[in-house]
Length: 84
Image (cartoon, rainbow, N blue to C red; front, side):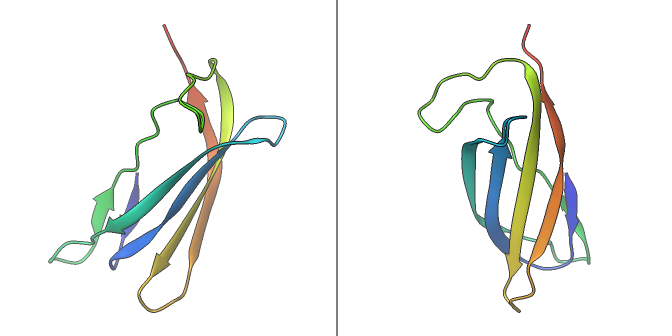
């Protein structure tokens, strides 16, 4: 999750450890709420672009957010996909 100070849209890209893009999630609109900041969550279902469930592993993400004023934010990190 992350905190927004204004309404944004963008995309979440998931990469394998080898650097292959496995999934892009388009984010049409995230709202910041009426009282300052608001924490939002973007959910990835663990599937690739064609709907195959990916194996348990560490993946990298790049979250590109674009507010209405045009100053983009880019957040990067690691995510652990763990299946039982």
